[in-house]
Structures are given as structure tokens and as C-alpha cells.
Amino acid sequence: MIKKTLKINGVERILILDKDETLAQVLRNHLLLTGCKIGCGEGHCGACNVIMNGKVTRSCIYKMSRVPDNAEITTIEGVGTISDMHPIQVAWMAYGCAQCGFCSPGFIISAKVLLDNNPSPTREEVRDWFNKQRNLCRCTGYKPLIDATMAAAAVMRGEMTKEDLVFKQTGDSIVGTNYIRPSAAQKVTGTWDFGADDALKMPEGTLRLALTQARVSHANILSIDTTEAESMPGVVRVITAKDIKAAGGTNKINGLVMLPKHNKTDGFERPVLCDEKIFQFGDAIAIVAADTEEHARAAADAVKVEIKELPAYMNAMDAIAPDAAEIHPGTPNAFFETNCIKGPDFDWDSIPDSQQVEIESYCSRQPHLHLEPDCGYGYIDEDGMITVHSKSIGIHLHMPMIADGIGVPLENLRLVQNHAGGTFGYKFSPTNEALIGAAVKILERPVSLVFNQFQNITYTGKRSPAFMNIKLAADENGKLLALWGNNYVDHGPYSEFGDLLTMRLSQFTGAGYGINSIRNKSTTVFTNHAWGSAFRAYGSPQSYMGSEIAIDVLAAKMGIDPFDMREMNCYKRIRRNYDPDRLSAGSIL
Image 1 (cartoon, rainbow, N blue to C red):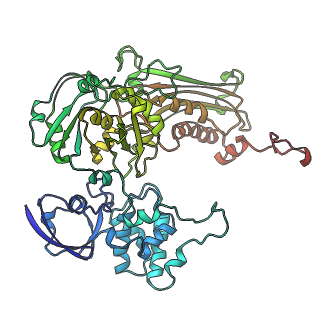
Image 2 (spheres, rainbow, N blue to C red):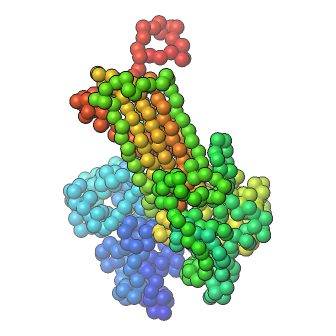
Image 3 (cartoon, one colour):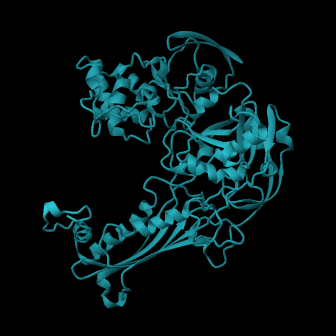
């Protein structure tokens, strides 16, 4: 242990701490200055930025052994308060920069150091500064952040006031205005608590959870040995699938609670904790509950899992090969199919090759890369309810998806949405909710589970890739006549929302164009790659990548400008002669 005397937000603090703790851990865990956020934990995202001796410091990687005695440290809490904001904080609100708000404290810290040293930066200098300080934002886009910095600089130079930045409402409507979002003040002052912040403020006796995760993509589990982990310091219990079943749970997440029809699977492939098989890298095998997160993580690494590795199918085409084994025995890997059938059959031999094309495209798997890692906590509340707080954006959907799996009747289960850093769709699926709920039921203690970024990337869902095989035909003038498609969605090992995603390929492939004949088949496939979840514009990137590339290729082949081909074929409003007095609500203008 070491003793440090630090001046934090103008107040001298004497701290006794571990020299290997990071500055972010000390600020958050010891002093509850949770305006300092931990996103990546590796110094890449800037959410943890603080000012130390006048310089921007990435506190998540700065060990306390390197922090000099009597260092002056400023966190977002020391920049300004809700009742006395710094001009940068006001500008951040005025320009709509604080959307999810997770990155806002780190950006404001960086901007303050820039403007303290350069009161009249150019836009290019602001952008370059944020790049060098590794500030990342996943919600707002960087233009408003630069706009806000430039406006704050003008206030600090005395050219305008803070009040000049703030939208002044006139009338009752705020539609189309610059009305400041109600949560912005807390977000820019670091007082808007996210899940990991709440977890630090849980009562004494709260157990901290960590996961033992699979390090291979496909395997049979032969045995799980928790003996060593259970004997490690601070460990209260190691939970496996057998404990969930003993507590009355099925250990299965209901993946087809929304759309149960027409699947060749029952939707219960995804375990809360793997018991017989591993289906993808990162699958959860055991939950360790301990007195500290560090003890829980150490013990999770000590759980011994004996496996027999199996062939891993890492893309849809391999998974549907004739010799591919079923990932879920008894269920074909191609488990759902949808067909878009419109108009009469089309004779592709009836037009010359110069007026038709066939293309293949692949829209890759994409991580959401949200800056706030998946996190949550749970407890038994005053009504005796198993209560889980998480980043869920579908609490009423997730309850029936997890209730039977953890053995809790719906009437005894309560889900609460935390203040959430951007999710971009991944939290349309339950992630940690079942894990936390099972732990609360079995332990009968409050618990918290906070992922680091590695767990965040390996455990949560991703945008599913699609293999698109599209044919288009047009007449000699470029008017589209027919579309044919045969597409495959690689949805990873779990079915949930895969049918909904694949239906999007029927809805969006060729969408917006008048095409008389369509025969477009799309198939959802189990693989051993990362499981699929919702992502912004769910299904449309995969669809449009195929059909829009086909239009570009066909336009080039026919010598037509691709914009002109689109304009020629896109849906248009039809304006008819009409009597305004007799216009019905269903008429087309």
C-alpha cells in the first residue's frame, strides 16, 4: 500500500491505496467521483479523461504509482456544477452533444484543457485535439461537438454570454427547436449515474459477479470443476447450470417469444449458463460471486472446464454444407426461411445478357462498440420481487424471455431500465438480465455484474452478416423488370430475432423501386460465430448492399448513369386531378 496526498477538485485528499490501482479506480471506487467513466479500460475512448497538473490524462490506464505527490487533479465534478456551469458544459447542452452522455465528461475535460491553452482554436485544431486525446463518441457525431467547443470559446473570450447559448422557448411547441434535453444538465456535470456508477453505491454485503467464459467456438462440455475457484479469497459461491436447474429454472432463454411461427427450432437454444455444449466463443459457463470484483474475476479464471472441441462453422455457407453437423442436434442449421413473391414468373432467357446482372455481396458482422460496457445489478426488493436493473431497451419483452429460464414467475420478476449509454440495438436482446436474476434468486443477496470491454465484445450480440446473391433485369431503357434473390443470414448459434431479421431481407431488398416480378428467398442459418442481435437500421444494410450494388452494376453494364436509373425506377407520388372538397383520406396525390 502507498500513501498519496492529492489535490482533487481543489480539495486536499490523503489516500491510502494499492500502487497498482488506476487513477480511475481510485476516483470512482474510493471517492465516488463517478463522472469519470470507464469505457474501453485501455485508454482508447477518452471517457475516463481527467486533468492532472494541467494535462489531459487517461485515468483508466494511469497507475497510482505514477501519480506524483501533491498532483492537482480535476474531474468533471470540478469543472462546473448544475447551479454554476462552465461555458463548455452549457455549450454541450445547447448543441445537443449530450445524447447518451457517457462520453460527455471526457470530451468536456479535453475541451477545457484545449481552450485554457488556446482560446481561439480553429475547427481543424479542435478536431485534431479530440483525435489526439482519443475522445470517441458513438451517438452524436463529431460536428456538434466541434460546434459546441467553438461556441464555448466565444463565451470564454467575452464575445457572448452563456445565456446567449441557451434556447429560449416561445409558445407551447418545441417541435423543430433547439430545446435542451431534460437530462443534459446532469450528463454534462457527471451526475447522471449509469449502471456501473449505481453498482458502486449498492449496500454493504453486495456480491460482485464475474463470468467464466468459453475460449473456443464449439465444444462438448465434459466436466466443470469449481473446487479451486470456491476456495479462493472472497468467493461466496460459484454458480453453474445445475444450480439454476435446482432452483427451478429451465436454464433456457426464450428466443422466439415474439415470432414463434414457421421456425424449425423451438427457440430455446440459448442457455443461461452452458451445461452440455459451448456454442460460441464467450459463452457463459459459470458465475462467480465474491466480495470484490477483483476476487470474482480471479476465481472465474480458476474454474476448470474440460471440453471436447468440435468443428466450428464460422460462416453460413460452411454451416449449410452437406457434410456440416447440426450445431443444435435435431435442428437443421438452416432454421428459418422467408420468400418475397410478387407478380408473375419472369423468363430470364427472354432478355439479352446485356440487360441483366447477377451479383454476390457480403455485409460483414459488426460489433456495436458502445462505449459503456454491459452492466447491471439486482436484489430482492421490499415486495419480495427479484429485481434486475440493466441497460434493457425492452424490459417488457425481456421478462418473458428470461423468467422460466431462471425459475421466477413473471409476477415475481421486475426489470428496471438504468440510465444507459448508447446501445444501438444490442439491448433489444437480453444479455446479463438472466445471469443477474439467477444469481439474486440463488444467493438471496444483492449483486452487480459489470463487464470489461473484452467481455462486452465477446458476450453481447452483433449485427449478423448476410450473403446476398441477387439478379436484376431491365428493359432496353433501364426500367427494372425482375429481381431474383437467394440470401443467407449468418445469425450465430442462437435464433432470437433471426426470423425478424430475415424478414427484413424480404422487405428491404429492392425496396423503393417498382419491380413487377420478384422471387427473393432468404434463409437464417445457425453458425458458431458471434450471435446476432439488433443493430441500427436492422436488416437494411445487408439488404441494400445486395440490391444497390446490383443496380450499380446493371447501370454500368447498360451505360446508364446510376442516379438516372434509380430516378427512373423509384416510387413516385402520383398527382391526379381532384376536387379538394371531395378528397378522401385514402386518396393518392
